[in-house]
Length: 330
Image (cartoon, rainbow, N blue to C red; front, side, top):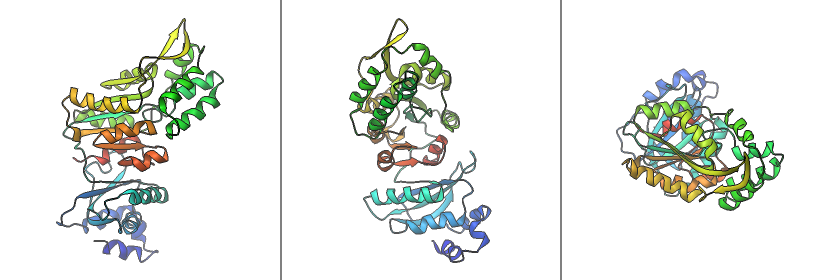
């Protein structure tokens, strides 16, 4: 199956090897009726036989290639998307995931291997983290900067996202630092939230196929509820900052939305909307998202911390958020 690629790779000077327009012809020759139980998705800009061939060659001791095709959304959002059908050669995929991370960095592509995929057309549930996932900032860090306690709060945030300290503990510590901050600071941040690239395309495509969309965030309702309305999502849950006389008190109201609550949100919403467990997807960037990822049929790391990229089913390291669509079947 790799003979065509190996032939091209054997001649480093071959123009065809580095020409994106020749990839379709090469893939057309890589068809087979042999059985397979896994798929490898390769996502990039102007993919070439050289890039795809090197990825297949470097992973061949872990993944046996059967055939290649283009994803049904290939080039719809401006990306080249190759789906490699094959079979995993190891039950333990940890080594393969590390290798895919290295190849992603080398060739500036996203790569994911899956044994099964939710169906785009069947409808489903996507639950997303908010900070550094739907939006490109950590809201609590931005509030802290305006309150001149930015460094202290950011350090705790980073430790929490890496899973080095318990989320509840980190949240209460950080929020306590915000005592006395005027609500106007929150309004200033809310009105200029940087939406992550690709989120609108992702939401639009999923809505066409009757997916339910939600935010489950360890952040704050002041921002999550705003995003629910702005992006026309179906549900949002997050933590409520206590505000008195226009100032933050340094406390949160009620139970903390932590990793377990996020996971429960996936289960509860799937049950509420009669969505099969096999059609649930969770996406996030921090250690606090790992439990809901494990609860879902598909867990997607979005420009995540190293521990999240390692443990998620697939990782978006390079592309925009709409790349999640490429990890779904028709």
